[in-house]
Amino acid sequence: MSAVLFFIAAIFALTGAIGVVMLRNPFYSVLALVVHLISLAALFLLLEAQFVAAAQVVVYAGAVMVLYVFVVAYIGGADQPLGSGAGALKVLGPIFALAVAIELCIAMLGSALEGISSKGAHLHTTFGTPRDIGRLFLTSYLLPFELASLLLMVAAVGAVVLARRRRGLEAEEDEYEYERGIVAQHRPLYTGTNAETTGVRRHVALEAEAEAEREHAGSTSRPEGGW
Amino acid sequence: MDIGWYLVVSALIFCIGAAGVLTRPNPLVILLCLELMLNAANLALVAFSRMWGTAAGQVFALIVMIVAACEVTVGLGLIVAIYRRQLAINVDDLNELRG
Image 1: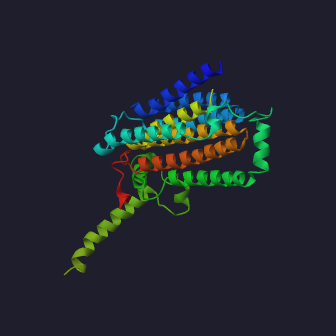
Image 2 (image 1 turned 90 degrees about the vertical axis):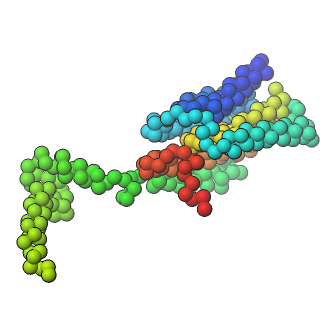
């Protein structure tokens, strides 16, 4: 029974992995990765790792993939031809991967580890339960646990800093022009924004008047100031 | 099933992911392929944890998942920043830091 389940899950995991690499649309790649992750969770269950399997489904297939889908939808996953990149890597990449696969298989076949060809050690009843994992996290592996929380916080702050709107990178001037040109024209005088009441920014109509005056003054004074 | 079968699946997934990182030009898909490679490592860790009968490998796998989540967050933030600057979402074109 476990052998049948293993082969079903393994075939789905490998199909999902191949789908991630081969599908042209990034959106379908993300969906293939979801299939891959869920079948990997089934493999974890077969290995008596209940908590890891649950975390895989909830955190990975749930939260992280939603993040991916959001970004793909934001960017607009355009179809890209396979291997449209540099020519050398297009050929060398699969060859390299095949070489690594063969080498790993040789390493595993020639391994002196006797446990590899067994079904694993005898287990105590709480193996892989949240209780077991939690006890390990709070006793033997307390430092990695705390470091992981620190890392998550740094990553969250870093992502916000990276993805925020920045002066100079954006079309902020365009927005200002848009407001001056369209929004502000249909607005009566002195009903503007806080920026106008505090004197940071003048009303558009006043500014236009001042500009016209300045121009007028400039045009009249130029002959005197010149030559 | 023998532990070796799980390790073979893990090795195959890792190689598929490596091939994807090398061949695909889209950084989004490259991030997905990195996920594949990290998941292959996770499968190997959990398989070895089952082999020895100690849960330490599962703790390691969970830490790897946390690191992968951080990597995804920062990577997707970078991709959004690239998109905002209206550059091509293509690693072959984004080569100004190549030296």
